[in-house]
Image (cartoon, rainbow over all chains, first blue to last red; front, side, top):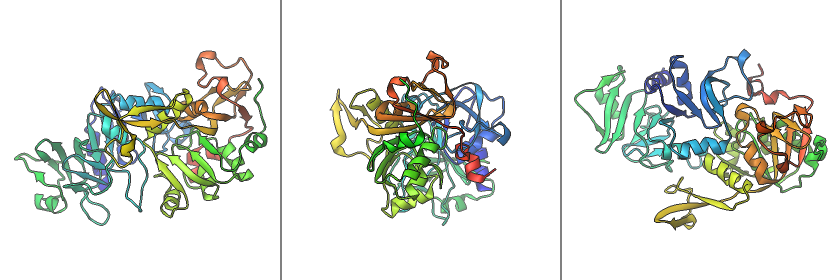
Length: 214
Length: 231
């Protein structure tokens, strides 16, 4: 399944020793693919550092959720705090990486994920602060929308969450890096040809000699 | 010093048109019982300040669905499609802030100050050029403090003086709102004797709290999975 493929690939981005925020939706789903002994601190903006896998129903504490409202467990050494402290951690750039979804993302690393005027505006949530203040922002999204329109664009059309903030984009079709030269294709899904990928991508892709498969 | 009140008396203080901060991020910290009493008493034209709109037929979503809310000041309503539709159709006025900026606007009000400077969203459509000021060669955005007449808070434990303790991720906006509102009404299902709370463990000191409501039971809403899926 597309979603599963994105989430599994994204889980490989996470290294020991990092402090990471995982956004609502695809990013929080990847925790289940992390090895139990991986020494990583997951920050949840509702006030948890050391968030871990979803809690089975019989062990769930109703007062302990992630930002998406799922019951979670915590790693030993974790902490809980109020929303002002939670965003102090973000704005002081203490996170090594943030993963979040997108309505649109473009080849300059601009990100739009809070407002589709007149249709669906979920709101800003933590996205502006995470996008603006985390050194490495990784976007997880499907390569095209439900109607098949590209989401990886030359230039975002929707109101921006933050400009020039994205480092890497992981979709069900490709892994791409935003660089000073432009958007570089790093990996392609094993079930797609380059021509098929390009036909589903609006952004101009730089194609290196070596492209990984996943 | 005894601030204990019955739920009806505590909520009856709130007039039509009141500006009310409501604790909670999703379900944890949301004062569901105080909200249900507000639903019962029917105060109208309310302005609510809450991180989110809860989910369909849960918490403040009930007040919105019942037409008691004129304006919602919030950060994210993506888990409540009904509220998004009410915003789109113009029935509900919604004002969005970045989550940490909303928290800080409330925190700074609670600290008795009037504003702060930030660079969040400075290039985005949420910034009006009139909010920008130059300080030491940097262009920054002036964010003003956000106050309210009332705050409704769920505490894990409280005493009758109004000392409050929160649990796990139920802390969120609660201690900030408890400092920023003129009248703070806290509910708890664990009202303990004065002196039983360890002083160093108290999150909100009693000076900020006006009323404490003891709950005999917690309804199923306090357990979001129960409320969502009826396990």
